[in-house]
Image (cartoon, rainbow, N blue to C red; front, side):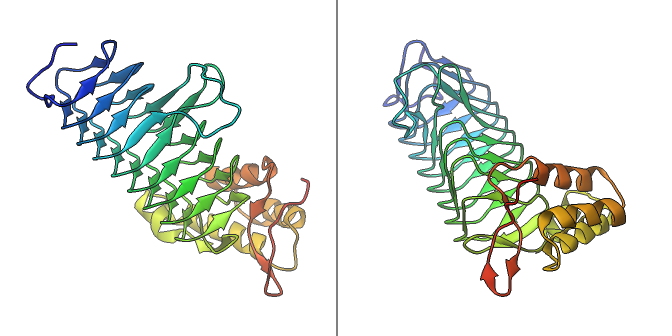
Amino acid sequence: MEVSEKIHKTAIIADGAKIDSSVEIGPNVVIGEHVVIEKGVKIGANASIEYAEIGEGTRISPFASIGGEPQDLGYKGELTKVVIGKNCWIREFATINRASGEGTVTKIGNKCMIMAYAHVAHNCVLEDEVIMANAATIGGHTHVGFGAFLGGLSVYHQNVRVGEMAIVSGASATRQDILPYSKSEGIPPLVRDVNAIGLRRRGIDKASRDAIHKAIRILKNPEYNTTMALDVIDKEVEKNEYVNKLVEFIKTSKRGVCIKSNKDAYMCANEEL
């Protein structure tokens, strides 16, 4: 490709890379094969990008690594990629691995922020406006819902789901799903409350917030197991799109959902539903 004034002379760029003329590329950046970079992207010094599509307006900080081989012993070199949406910010030393499995994708939505040293493993999906704080780590095939916040140094087992607009405290770790709209912490990260501030910031009306809060209180009630709690929610909580999503999230969980402690012993709700 033709070198523009916006590309530092020390950058190394594969011939087949497709890069918009407005893209800024800093010193010692390496851009390998199968890369598409849209307009307005800014790439800091020493970043490495391969097998990736980068949406317009995204910023990539120094030493970030995007599209590297997945850390999966089953990967045999098949063609996969990373797709990053518009107006994201990938901070220093963050790693986003390409997918494992022919034709599959690791996907980052629009307006996501992946802070320094965070890791997104193969085949993960982050919906729009997800924030991963410093050194948060998600295993392969993890799905993170819209607007979720993953605290610094928190860890997520492969195949876990994090519900939309959930917030998980730093240094938490989970092998099971995180309830939508919840505020969770610990090992495992049990539900402490509703993510009230996050819901208000997202413009969720008070009636809907109150219904979510009531549903989560029922789920946390030690008198009910999860199946019983869902029956009570069905009878006593006014339905709206958020309560419906919360219930469906639990019913479709394959790993169980971290919800409550029982008599001071950490337990997770993982009954067959």
